[in-house]
Image (cartoon, rainbow, N blue to C red; front, side):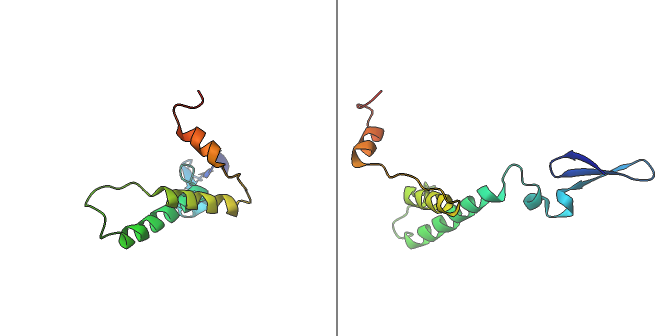
Length: 107
């Protein structure tokens, strides 16, 4: 067996051909997820599910169009993810939020 790269192992057969085994023979999109690891996909799926729920709850007020994901949903999913990782973040003061949202203040 030769380790070719992450999630790819090569086995040389008796006839000289090489068999490449991806993700240890597991579901490749889960076992070898280099582009979209489960640690990222959980946030994507949570955002999609909560946004679908939001759309159903607000369907009477939504025009037939493409809508942005509500910021509250994105913020909630991000906060849950950080909490699950044991990471705490500071809350901005009203003065800091004003500074960040203003083009007139700061540089």
